[in-house]
Length: 91
Ligand SMILES: [Zn+2]
Image 1 (cartoon, protein in one colour):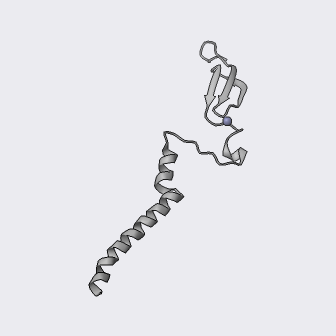
Image 2: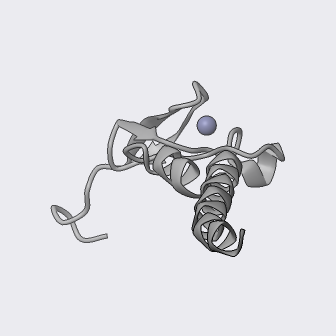
Image 3: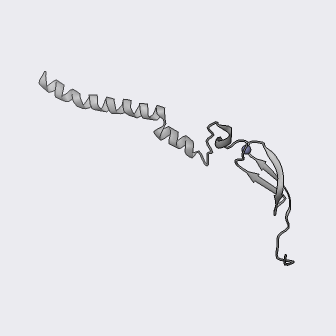
């Protein structure tokens, strides 16, 4: 190894946002991660939403089950209100 060009390879403590922590070796003494093998859905088998800036919430609001039901209800009301004038003319 050429001297003076390689970074220090030190013990590094990795901390995950789920609370899990373990030590490994890296060029920095401390690492903070958002997801690890203890909480990643692939390993945990549970669904976890990794949210950045409320994007999931906004999506659910716009396209979630409840939002779609609301939109259908609104469309139905709109259709019915469009029908009414015709029916009145016939009567
Ligand atoms: Zn984790």
